[in-house]
Length: 444
Image (tube, rainbow, N blue to C red; front, side, top):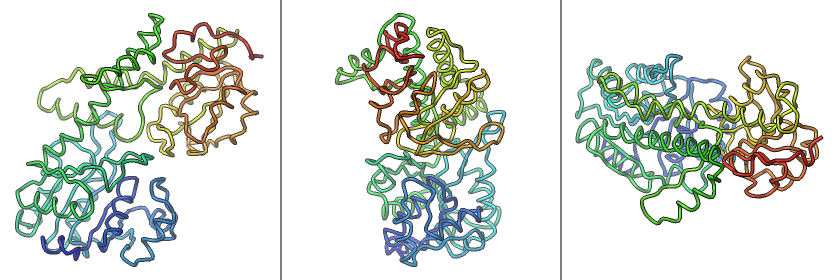
């Protein structure tokens, strides 16, 4: 197995062709490995096979060039896993309605591996999960099948670190943590990923690797919640939180900059801390920080709706019956990712309070609302912004001309300080001192 990895003679299979799996599969192809992309969605596989990527970080041109090499095979049939020497699992790990880990996608992938894998196989799990998953859900079924760990079966955990839309850090240059369930698995994981990733960070167990991912994202969740709490407090104290943050950031040590906003989104930050919290409870440990951060973060969309109501009230209007436009619906700038986006929650809550809500997002132009109805973005026509009672800047993509948004909009709620200190006469800015001094200038 080691020789196959070093000589790039191993065939790699990636299970799950989403925002993690597709870029990883493409990376293996580009580095000279015969690669299989397996996904249970026939529609997705057919679309990818036609050279159409639904992942913003992988262009159609990049995908097509990989397909043209004949080194990239796509399939929706699990039987294809029998051809693979190494299988990498990149499937979703959502939460159930009761906020517990949903392991169904991993379990389904493992069932396919147990059924169709070669007599000798290396398996790596990249999906974010709780410590112990690799041993419990991958090793146990494989050993029960008759595989022998360290002889014809090897397993590691290597957490995905994909940041959709990040132009600086991508699959190849983001350091890769690798932890094996035994010494040989760790060594093989280092070798395999080292053939593709610039920097591999080996750790001494799969559990350390699993915990590292949860630590990374729980750290972010807690700090985002903290800075939002500080922003809300600063508003009460009539202190500009944005200027405060810049002042604190001048300290060259001991301070890490986080900025407030309308809430958290994506697959990682809203969900990963709850995996850790769930595991902690199984050990009779209650993490107050994690739970409080989760509560604060999930209240932020509601806080933004309250701010919208206050802004409208100062101009003798109520949410009920007002025309409100949300600018940017994806959860982060320059991305088309709508998963857990605070914009979606703001949209639903404004609608529930009687507003006539529209949105403008050329990056993420469609979504299904809570009722299952398809909603479509309005065109980017800044003159049309004048027809709304309130324009809410949720996600300021680079494609937007903020100057024109400020000029044409009669009243603005700026949730991310995108407009800085401009248009103060008609802007209600989250975390700004002057927000309550917004006047009715330009408002009909």
